[in-house]
Structures are given as structure tokens and as C-alpha cells.
Image (cartoon, rainbow, N blue to C red; front, top):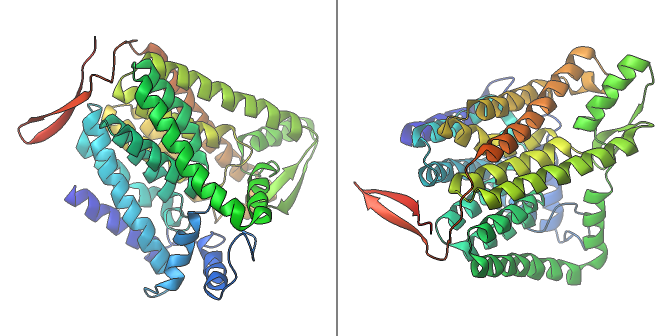
Length: 409
């Protein structure tokens, strides 16, 4: 892990020092410092100024301005590096618990800055995906309530980890762990409910604005439905319009409403399929694969696919390599690299629909869709088992190394 950690730190430094990896123009980090300063000056998020993220994003954005470590970008980047190192350690543990190669897991995270560039440090998405993997590792290590609490913290940082909850619940129920499943759901509801209720009491209007902002967004330019509309227009000559709102460039088109609904149904169907198979193939690897594939599905089939969403794929690069699932690891790596090539350097070309850039984004979206499809297929081929987690996923020590063994009836 030492060599892999050194490589990760080197890659992180390159995202500050060498172009094009260092290009962070138009990334959120360039806008966070003034916002954080407003809070420090007494204008509180939700109540005094509009804030579109969940409440635990506040300390991530505010801390680098409150505790200066050089520039704001450096302080913010150090937080992202710390979570990237934590993600590496967690992927090693996940590989150990699921029979994967730990070295390949470490290397998969270590190469992420070279694929993503400043996307790694220009946003805080590394934080919720790290917390999500931490939740899964905790559950596999028999700490179910801790796992659901961590999942709640991830949701309160950025909402997408919520798609993991039904999969974890189904996996536990499929393993006969009804009591642990109910305790976990109650813990998740308590964590999210307490913090959510506090924000609602603090500023009802501000809380509603954040919810409305995330749910009412139109079809974003880089989303998978939008790329299909590009193909439609290329074939039939009907050209949609682009417009800016909700912090992104969006597409207005006669077919956008229908495609948004259809892809929403695809998202629900994919999560349902992953949930079903996680319950039937209740092995540790099935839990991790189904959960991470659900996160990928949220990006692939949602109406927004912002560039930073590829950070959510880092664990799939690492664990796909650890398991020898080279298609999954390779597609996740390719999707990350394609996004770095397109954003921010070629984003304006996408806005004006230059064919090469449109093709690049379409290939990126197709890669993530294929990841979801391959995950469902692999889970469908998985051997169904029955058993009980209440008997315990007992850890044993062999040669100084802890392993998880599942006792099945």
C-alpha cells in the first residue's frame, strides 16, 4: 500500500502542477471560496444564502476557508486527497473480504488522478463515494448499524448513495438477517432524519430550495438521454436548444420529457434487478458489485451526468481489477479518461455540438451503461445461496491476515 499511496500522492500533485491534468477551470472549487467566506462572515447556508447541497457538504466547503493552508484550492485538495487515501485502504479491505487481489485494488485507486486530473480535487464527490464503500465494508465486517450510519452520512453529504440502501437491505434479508436489516434501516432513518429535521427547523424555505433544486433540474447536456437527442437531431435534422440553469448547461428538445421518463424507468429497473440478484446471490462480492453498479446506474440513466460523477467509478476501477473483472475496470477507467478529455477543455465544443466531442461524451455514457449491464449479467450468472448472517461472518486470522468466512446453513 505504501507504493500505491505514494503513486496516488504523486498523481494528486500532478493535478496541481502539470497541464492538462491541472486544468480546474469551471470546476466547483473555483466558486467555493467566496461562498465559504459568506458563511464565515455570518450569512448562514439555507437560512441567509441559498445552498443546493445536503447539510454535511457545508463543513467540506467551509473548512478550507476557515483554516487556511496556503490557498483555498490547496486546502480543499488536501481534504480530497485524505479521502482518496482512505478510499484506497477501504478498497484493499473490500478486496480482502471478497476474495480479490489487494495489490490490484490499491493500484486501481492510485491511478485515478492520472485518469481524472483535477476532477479528483475540483469537487467533493470523493467524500460520499468513500463513505459509501466504508459503509459496505462495515456491513461485511458484521458492523451493520455502523454501516447504515455511514451510509446515512454519505447521503447527507451528497444524495446519490441512497440508491445503495435497498440493495444492502435486500442482501441482508436474503441472508436471513432480518433483525440486523431492520436495525440498519432504523439507523439510516435516524441519522438522515435527525439532521434533515434540524435543517428543516433551521430554515424550511432553504431546505425546500435544496430539495427542489436537485429534483427539478432539466435534462443536462452531458447526460445519456441528451446524447441520444444529439443522434436524433443528426439523423433527422431537428435541432434542440441549449440553455443555462441550475448551475449547468441543459438541452431543451421536443423529446426531452419522454426520454427523461424512459431513462428514469431504466434506472428503477436496473436498481430493482441489482437488488433482486443481491438478495439471491448473498455473497460478499455480490453486495459490493450490486451497490457500486447501482451508483453507476444513477449516473448513466439520470437526467444529469456532471463530469465529477466519474469519481464515483473509482471503486469499480479498483475492485474490478481486484476481482479480475477487466471489462468493468476497463470501462470505468475509459469513462473517467473520456470525461477528463472532454471537460473542461472541450466543453464549449460540446455546447456547439462538434461531432468529435459529441462522440466522445456518447462513448463515455455508453461505457457506464455497459458497466451496469455487465454487473447485472454477472450477478445473474452468480450461484444462488441461502444462509444466515445471524450466525456471523466470522473473521479468522491466518498468517497474520484477517479473512471473512460466511457460515451457510
